[in-house]
Image (cartoon, rainbow over all chains, first blue to last red):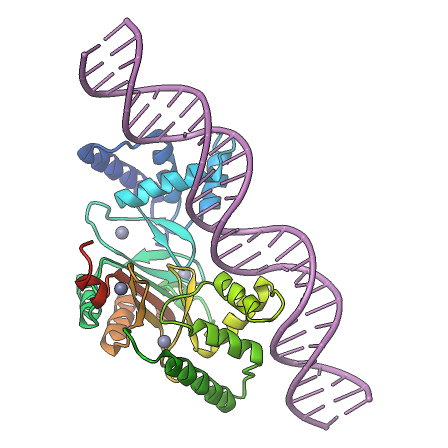
Length: 156
Length: 156
DNA sequence: TGACCAGAGGATAAGTTATAACATATCACG
DNA sequence: CGTGATATGTTATAACTTATCCTCTGGTCA
Ligand SMILES: [Zn+2]
Ligand SMILES: [Zn+2]
Ligand SMILES: [Zn+2]
Ligand SMILES: [Zn+2]
């Protein structure tokens, strides 16, 4: 992710989410919008409690966990956010318009997360399930390693 | 998994673990053995606290969470047990002799879990990571759906 | 207009999962 | 034995998630 203008990422995510909610006639309330914006504060996963703190810092009076979890439920339901199971954390989806399962690359050093978009891989996964008699309704893939950047600059 | 003699599964898992620990010169203590046996009580995932209850029921005086978590750490480290991230639960590995990452099929109805052993799939995953500049040190794939049996007998 | 209803979100509490920190027991080995 | 390393016990608490109840608001439709 290096040094890009991240404001653009945030803005684009918010605009796309807004459009999708209009199209679906779902309610993109100020709270939900704010939480999505906070999720997009970086290309790193954030936990529910980090969001809680961020939201509380942002002028509002201290909010309680259910507030965050409800907003996240909505955002996940709409496909704006994915949950990273191995981290108990959340990350914005760069392509919420197309329904898909979450496949992620996670850098163990800098914690940058990149979403994998690979149709061949998804087909391969579905086939593997079918081969063993299972249907594939949902699947998650989380790959832990070092990102390009951290590989270069590090010896571990 | 249907109706097999599950005692054989348990016995085989314990024997193999014993052999591996002898070969590696690691300590397969009574506690660790007991926990592995409990993990293998079925082909379904068990949570740490379920293990805690089982262990406590099994005559011993009530044990505390760290006891279970430490035993699980060991069993996972040795490859006898995998952790299912999406369920916060644990399951025995049918092939601990060969190092591999955990790829699972999980039936959302009966909770049976089947481990996928598919080298082509693993290669595909590693390639997908490399394509995006990441190394793949570790990865987990969890596929949720219906097993063969539940597909037949159900309408949902 | 005003009764009604559904959904969002605030407040409180509790349930579930996991670890920190420290004490003690057991084992391997000289 | 004595010593260090590893394993287990004990207590407390952190971290994550959900249930429940209640109020408010905005829309629907006699
Ligand atoms: Zn996505
Ligand atoms: Zn990195
Ligand atoms: Zn395995
Ligand atoms: Zn099933």
